[in-house]
Image 1 (cartoon, rainbow, N blue to C red):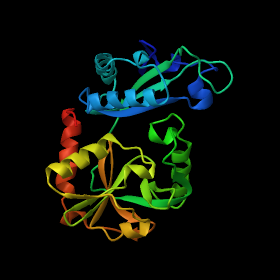
Image 2 (spheres, one colour):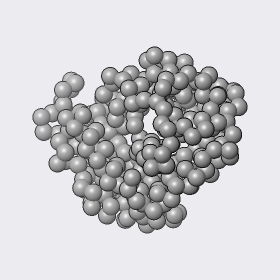
Image 3 (tube, rainbow, N blue to C red):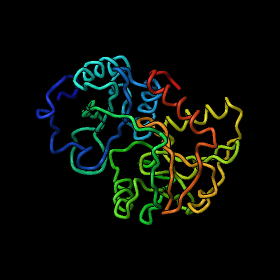
Image 4 (cartoon, rainbow, N blue to C red):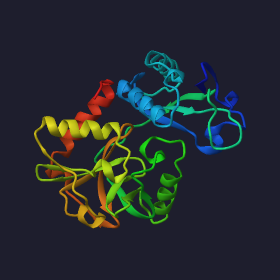
Length: 285
C-alpha cells in the first residue's frame, strides 16, 4: 500500500514523521476526509476551499498547501491500489517540525500526507443508534472545534463513552445543553415539510454534506428551522438523520434507547438519493 507524503509516493511502511513534528506533539494541524468514486473526488473544490479556511484560521501559509490539480493527480494514482469503486481519501496537514513551546515557527516546514483506502458505502436506511454524551460539550469559541483539527480527543472520548452502552455514535450537546452534532456528522430532523438542523452558533463543524442538504431544501422550497432542540425533543420528529461527506446520509432509528421516526413517510429517501448521486458523480455542491 502506497501513500503520498511531502511530494512523493512511498510505501506505507516507509512513511514517517520527525519526533519534533507539531502535529504529533501538539495536534497542530488539520485534515479533510473525502469520498472518491472511480478515482474522482466528490466536492473536491469545496474540500480545497475548506482546507484554505482551516489554514487561514490557524495562520498556516496557503501557498504551502497542495494545488487542486495535484490532489486530483495524486488520488488518481493512489486509487489504482484500492480495487473498489469507492475509496476514502484523507489529506492531512501538520505544521511540521518546530522548537519546543507553543508558538509555531515563522516559516513552517509542513508534513502533508494523502492516503486512500477502500470504502464500502452503507445503505442510508440502515439505522444508527445514537446516545447523548455526558462527557463532552461543543464550545462555539473553540478554534479546534471549528475546523477538522488533528486533535480529535473530544470526538474520541464521546464515541468511546456511548459505545460502551451499545450506541453507534454520540450526540454531542452545545454549551447550553441543546443538540449540536454527532462525533463525525451533522444532524437533521424532518417534521412534515420542515427540515431542522442545529444553528452554526452551537459550535458545530459545518460539513459539506450539511451544505448540500440545506441547498437541496432551499431549492425544494422547504422550511428550514434552526431552533434549539434537546435530545428528548428529537423523538418528536418524523425522521432524524445524520450527514457527512463520506457516508452521505444515514437515518437514525434510536436515540438514548428510544425509537424515533418513520423515514419512509418523509422526503428522506429522495434527499438521500440526491446526495449519493452527487457523491458518486463527483460534482460540486
